[in-house]
Image 1 (cartoon, helix red, strand yellow):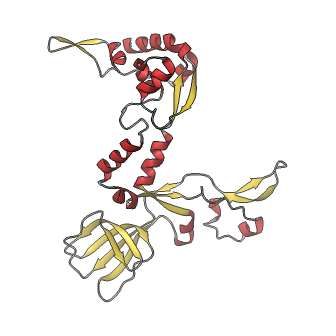
Image 2 (image 1 turned 45 degrees about the vertical axis):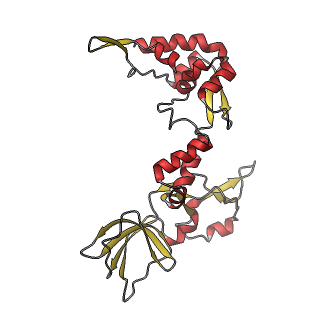
Image 3 (image 1 turned 90 degrees about the vertical axis):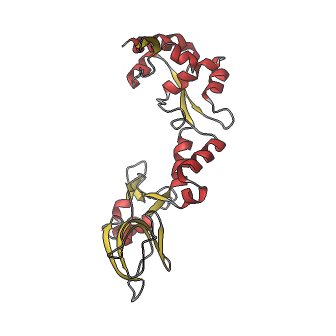
Length: 273
């Protein structure tokens, strides 16, 4: 990255000339389209480092900054693809362990991807009104409906349900984030009142039931996903989400080598602004 910073303007810092590393170059999409050409590239394990990609394509490792710049990388440690070892360390650093990351629910998402079913018009017509929004007509070349398929949109809700549990046991040792269980039911603790014996839980699996001891009352505070629609949604766990986001970062843009001089010229002009 030394070549990148060598182009930055000098500023006076307590009487000493210093590079203005806060200067930022912003190539708009229109500028990129007008000034230079690029191609799509899929990062491969073992050759992901920008300096290696730069050397392999530009015959110089000094153009790693251009790979970052052309892909809008602000933080090269977290905005750029992480190889397996780095990804594992990232998960451990952020969540503490793989087990925690794999059990921590971040949100719920419309689970259309694994559902490739095609239902008939008659089946669609008989669906409950609240369920029909998960399906859309599939048309043939004559624009005739041949059936209904899942809507392929990533609808997201923060949680499926928020429930208030009143209990008659000591909850002073409970902490936010703990999993509260009753038989097959469980939820993640988000708030509590030790004096009143109240637990507020979200990300609910199955149903909590009021009993004579333990949980004495169950009150649904918020229901984002009705019971009739639960099969159309799936929880997204922290590990899966982080892995999904990291995999998307494999797909980058590389500027064609023939445009290097034009890009460097534009880079300098942008810094002067």
